[in-house]
Amino acid sequence: MQSCAGQVIFPEGYLQKVYKHVHDAGGICIADEVQVGFGRAGSHFWTFQTQGVIPDIVTIGKPMGNGHPVAAVITTKDISMSFKNSGMEYFNTYGGNPVSCAIALAVMDVIEEEKLQENALITGKYWVSQLNEIKKQFPIIGDVRGLGMFIGIDLVKDRETREPASAEAKHVIARMKENFIILSTDGPYCNIIKMKPPMCFTKENVDHVCQKLVMVLKEIEGKNINSNANMKKSVISGKKETLSDSDDSGVSVNGHHGFVNGQEYVAVHPGDTDSVTVVT
Image (cartoon, rainbow, N blue to C red; front, side):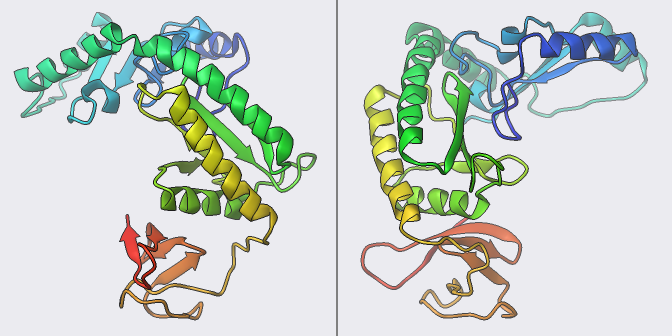
């Protein structure tokens, strides 16, 4: 399964054929397990295992330290030696430091002892089933897909044409954030709602997310979400203002979501005040 590009699940045997073609051409195959590894897929500890392949190089990172900056590259001795024999030098001041290693080991102990991989499998299946029930209510949901606790909701304007509902997806992200639920968009058209929560997520957490998602989707049904909306919100003065498309402040907003000088942000209204908080 791809960690980016829309949570696409490969057909059975796909990577086996890809790996064969690459190896036959003299190349090597690299599996990036930064987002999808460490049991998140539920059925397997590493997602490449779902395809029955063995990569030449595996890269892992973020979840390895549960927030602490630590990562690793796993490869064969032959590939490692070929890099060494190339004459290139690699230096890392903090590489292999005992503090980071201890933290990574502790994280893996927790994954095993608290059965987080098993939880990802059970809770993930429940989540997909609940989302598929929601799909029956809302035609905007074109597909629900994923493995374990790595799920994508494909939002479309039309299930037949598959036209992506990109503006609507951005609206969902912004409104969910206002309800204290952090999600993101993914895919070439940014119309896939990406869900990858902490692996301790429970069915009760899933129910809460689904409840808020239904609320937001009902809002979308009742209005026309325009990706070229002219109503903009100033984040310079901290007060609501109407800005033109050519405004020099660099603010470009769709609803509560937009860009400031090229930096993406979500505008959140705290309480009943008119102030705007920019979250980058």
